[in-house]
Structures are given as C-alpha cells and as structure tokens.
Amino acid sequence: MSIFVIGCVTVNPAEPDAFQHYLDVTSPLLEKAGARVIQQFSLENALIGEKPAEMIMIVEYPDMAAVDGLFQSPEYQAVIPVRNRAFSTYSVSMVS
Image (cartoon, rainbow, N blue to C red; front, side, top):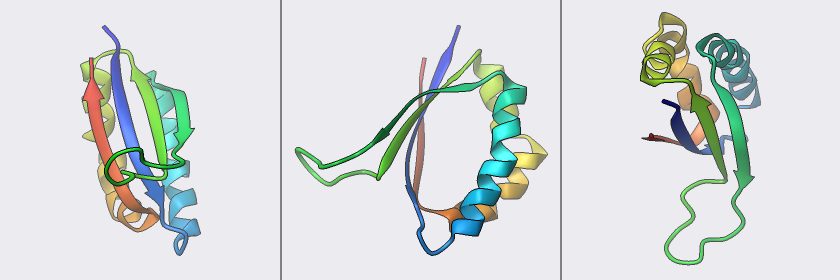
C-alpha cells in the first residue's frame, strides 16, 4: 500500500549551496526507494493562522519499508546537518 509523505519546507535563501547538496544526495535516494514527487505547491497566503512553509511537497512511497529505508539510511543520516542549513522550515508528515 502506498505511503504519502508530506513535506512543508522553506528554503533558506542564505544557503543555496546546502540546498543544492541536499537535492544532489536525496534525489538518488528517492529513486532507489521507488518514491516519486507527485505534487508540489508554493503557498501564497494563509487563510487562518500562520503560513506553515513556503512550499508543500507530496511524495509517494511504495510502502512503509521504503520510507524507513530512506530516512534511516546512512546517506540520509549523513546529510541531516546540510538539511538543517538548507531549510529554515522543514516539517515532514506521513499519511497512508
């Protein structure tokens, strides 16, 4: 059964190199996991409350093992410090 991971992110404009490095590492990991970005939205305005991020991404994974495999992989764990610089907002949730 597919698992959908929803990322709410804001890219840190002061760290473009970190953002590019993060993409360079995670793009092959997504492919290896059989995951694909199915939707990407830029958020304009919040109707109620505060805007959670600048962008929302929905990524489809084939199953929970693929999600765990990516996020627990040594490659992803090693890129976390870069991720923390690349994004000023980074929140990930999951729905099934």
